[in-house]
Length: 145
Length: 145
DNA sequence: ATAATATCCTACCAAATAAGTAGGAAATTC
DNA sequence: GAATTTCCTACTTATTTGGTAGGATATTAT
Image 1 (tube, helix red, strand yellow):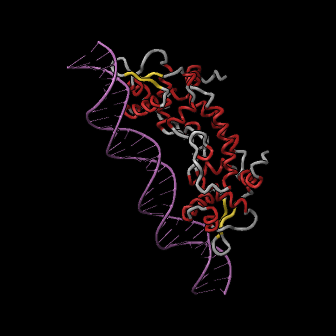
Image 2 (cartoon, protein in one colour):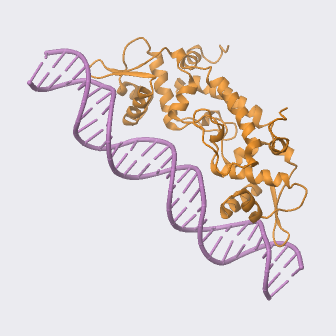
Image 3 (cartoon, chains in turn yellow, green, brown, red):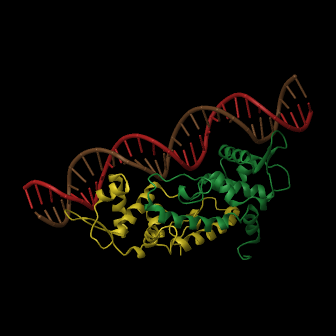
C-alpha cells in the first residue's frame, strides 16, 4: 500500500499540475485546499524538489511549481521517490535491489512470479503520468479511453 | 513490499508443498530447514491454519500439512492472508476496502490508475499457485514455459 | 495413568518505520 | 529592513513489524 505521505504527495502534485503554467503555488495554499498538514507537506515538497521534479521560489510571489509538464512526470517516479520500491520483493526491485537473506532456491520460484508482477505493474505506472490522473478527473468517469 | 513474515510464510508453504502427500511436517523441521525463527513460525502457521489453508495434528506424528493440493493455493490468497491488501490504495482494494479520508475528487484520477494496476497484479497472483513456484524451482531457470 | 510429543494460546517486548511538529535560518521581494 | 516564504535540523508520538516467553491443551505410546 502507498503510505499516507505518498498519497499526500500525489494530492499536492495534482494540485500543482492543475495550476501548471500559472506561476508558483504556496505550500499553505496546497495545504488548505487539499487538506494536508502544513509542516508535513513542507517536508514532502522539499524532498521532491531535491529529487528534481519540483522547483521552488522563496519570498513574496514564491512557492512551488512542477519542474516539467505534467505529462512528463511518471507515476512510477513519484512512487519510487516518496514510497520506495515498486516490486514486492527486494531481490526483484530494479531501483532498490537487495539480496534476500538466506536466498536459497526456496523462494526463487516466488521470485520469478514477483518479477512478472513487477513488470506488469511497471508497464502501467511508467506510462501513466500526472497529466493522466488530472485529465481523468476533469473528464469524469464516463469518458474512459 | 511483502513483509518478512509473508516471505517466511511462502518459504514454509513451499516446504509443505514439496512434502505434500507425505504426512505432517513438524514446525521445528520447517524452522530448521528453511531458517525461520521457530516461535514466529508457529504463529504464522497457526494463522494460516485458522484461515483454512493448512491443517494440523498434535502429538507424536503430528505437524502441519496443506489442506489442499499445491495447485489449489493461489498466491493472492496467501498474500492477502499474511500481508494484507494487494491494491496500492485502500479505496481500490477488493478485500480490504476503506474509504480514503477526504476523498475529494483530487485523487480519483489516481484511483482509477490504481484500480488498473490492481487488476494487472491480480491477473497474475490469482492464477499462480504454490505449485507454480515449486515447479519452477525444480525445473530450473531454463525451462520457462 | 502418565510421560512424551506437538501444536495452541495469551501476552508481552523491542526495534523500526510512519506521521507529524517546532522553531528558527536563509533567501527573496517590496 | 520588514515582510514573505521556503529550507533545515531536530524532535516527538503512534503504529507496525518482528520476534519471544511460558504455559495450556490435545494426541499418542507405553
